[in-house]
Length: 382
Ligand SMILES: Cc1cc2nc3c(=O)[nH]c(=O)nc-3n(C[C@H](O)[C@H](O)[C@H](O)COP(=O)(O)OP(=O)(O)OC[C@H]3O[C@@H](n4cnc5c(N)ncnc54)[C@H](O)[C@@H]3O)c2cc1C
Image (cartoon, rainbow, N blue to C red; front, side, top):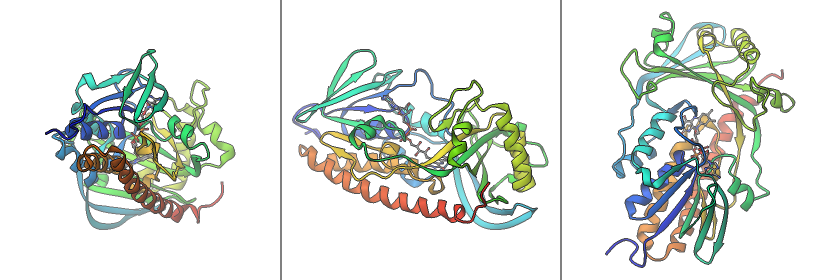
């Protein structure tokens, strides 16, 4: 007998990024009929950069016959001072991948007929245990479960939890990647095989590590060197920081390739004053640094009848946890397991999923605040 003997269990997912796809592969494995709607038309290439590999994601990929996920590895960490020097080394092996490699591995495990790019979910209504989603092409689809995996700015969260704010944390992440072939030869051996951290003079810190190349290649010479620099930006300067080279003001990030030249020049000048010279050299060599604001979102609930918030649409945790994708994978696995063991008792399964999401999400959220506040407490004002 199949998992859901009563009828074909149907799931609509808004958001075809990490959380949406994790849910799609876990629920399809269970036997559900899944349709993923991603509003971005075409391939999603210009997203995040490096991601620290976490077990929850690897387990989800393996359990559902997806992957393999390309990753790079290092033997340990190097801690640098802003004044220069070779820093302090610590043995701590770690593995790294990239947002695009994760997305490619997940997307490859979801058949094309289950994934619609350029399809925006515009409105959702519930009647009893059925959910209707109105799509941008004018069609309406019905399902037994609607999963809102629509990211940190989730419209569904804003509708269901209007009092929950995405609070600006007071700093941004400047990010960049350099193709290994573009990394100056004196920098390569310095960064190779290590996860490097540098404190910044005015507070904040920068980190760097190698990730797979654009096509997932992991051999030496084909990788990318990824860096993230957390920089304090006061609320009054945020609108300027989020204005792109065409004068368009963005809500929470400056997509790659849109940063104004004057902002890049200011970033490079700041790097030369504030961080270790080798880290500053990485910033200088990067053609197209991009910016993401750091925001905190904590939700009291993830379940609203047959609508479930997941991934960044639920909690947004600080990136220092390196746990956002692991949380998305964990939530998808928990949901699939709960539905499997509850059989026809779908609502019981959803309630137990919500309980575990709230427990995991709040713990990771708090941990992220502690890590983030550690440096922002003693930063200087600028
Ligand atoms: C600086 C930084 C560093 C990070 N580093 C790490 C790390 O090392 N490790 C880690 O695990 N995590 C890291 N993260 C977090 C990680 O990137 C996110 O947690 C993860 O990508 C969340 O994915 P998501 O699918 O929930 O949301 P998103 O990736 O934001 O996806 C939401 C999707 O929904 C789509 N969408 C929105 N509305 C609609 C709609 N109405 N209809 C259809 N589609 C819609 C959007 O187009 C988007 O594709 C980092 C984050 C930042 C900012």
